[in-house]
Image (tube, rainbow, N blue to C red; front, side):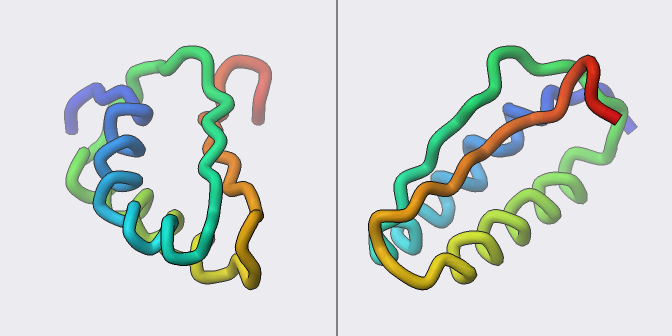
Length: 77
């Protein structure tokens, strides 16, 4: 395991699925302000993030919808 900023894993995943995002007419809104380092296996977390984003984009039924990407930080359970 190594400490990784989760935001560093989200951006590449979004880039990988940007054609799906465009095809669905989805706007991605990022609300994070800062990122914390989290001990993890980056390749595994990257795969989880990618799967979550793909599922979220597929779940959006019509164009013009927003997908909000946020990272939980201090003050969240």
